[in-house]
Length: 507
Ligand code: FAD
Ligand code: DLZ
Ligand code: SF4
Image (cartoon, rainbow, N blue to C red):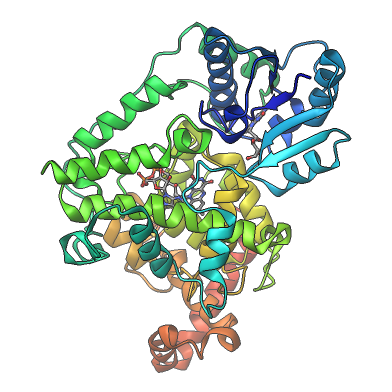
């Protein structure tokens, strides 16, 4: 009897677990559906990327001789959701037997479990650590810190290892990284691809069906198949990887990508596998093309952070994304959706997010994430914003980054202290402050940067929770040493700022 093999829009790999089960007579089911396209108001570039990459992958499978049942969004028979499409195809092909690869979000895992067909969800072994591997690592540990997980992954994969020792004699080369922005960037950004016929059709469809979503659909330049994604990887390794480490944390108004890879979109959709990406980087180091600090930093992001945040999401369960340990309830202000603001760092980051569906890690962490935490925004609304804003957004990778790392809403499971900073950090690591109406160096009064006010107000508000944290002792000591009238001024000005924000007044 034939079986249905379900392939989701972020499982576009020939080697994905369910497809490896394909045998003659089976039918591969792929469907563009309203429910996936609207469960958050995705950036139009993300929807276009997903549909175009799905169409090209389906065509490739058909060329290889597989039977593929593909449903475009505009098909009048379209059931509107993945379970509905499976039920329709099951009836059409006279089967109830379905093989799927486990989706990356709890809501879809549950929807498949509830679907009245015999659906087997196989482990997604594109990841290097299975759920069992992560649980084994986490079991009995008091703290689930990335660094220990990462070292374990290095040993397990043998990546950047010389025998039992880390290559270059250190596990982590971050002290060589984190330099302020360079005067000039030699990379020129990620590879751009001119839309082919398939992409052009999808762009028209997305323009018609999702006209009001936040973000610019055009110009559209993402890779949409494996061949193109591999070319983007080659370009990154050749031209950007050598400088990746040094300028990983820098931000520049005139250069949105610096030396970042812009590969998460392709990795998360399956156009690239994590192993091929890290092996390409390791080879560049072994060939003497890229220094160890750059390659180690890059490899850590992929076999460390990427696997770790997924491990946390699945280990903690469906309620993780709804945690709110600091009881933050302020509504997300309209400046996140591009309403004018005088805060140049926010304006630049949001503008880039709107045009490219991309911002690099430090922009997400230390600009928008930092600001949201300092303002006490509702973490679910913050996560919804990130989900709606980025082409690489999926809950399995988003949640521990937003709920854990940036908003401290998991109470410190991921971050040992909240990622908060005053204007100092942004001033040192970017050129944003030079073009800002506020002054990074001004602490109170006319023109004082809001980060300088909000930072101390945050610490003061959460004193009970954080004062005993040894990593924050120095901040509290500094705060306590300030003159009482200065502290009162800071708190009052922070309050005025937050009230303006809540009232929708321009800030
Ligand atoms: P590079 O800087 O070139 O890094 C290389 C690769 O490492 C990335 O492609 C990515 O696969 C991986 N990586 C790096 N940092 C992380 C991390 N913290 N977690 C997981 N993987 C990482 N990444 C996503 O893929 N999807 C998301 O939805 C997402 N949401 C985020 C939200 C917040 C608030 C923060 C702080 C980070 C988020 N990240 C997310 C992680 C990171 O910001 C992006 O992976 C990275 O910016 C993608 O750009 P890049 O490919 O140029 O990465
Ligand atoms: C992101 C996305 C979008 C926009 N549309 C579809 C779709 O129509 N069909 C599909 O199979 N997958 C889509 N995806 C990817 C899914 O949302 C993704 O598989 C789940 O969120 C689990 O990670
Ligand atoms: Fe951002 Fe403050 Fe710098 Fe302006 S002065 S860019 S608001 S950190």
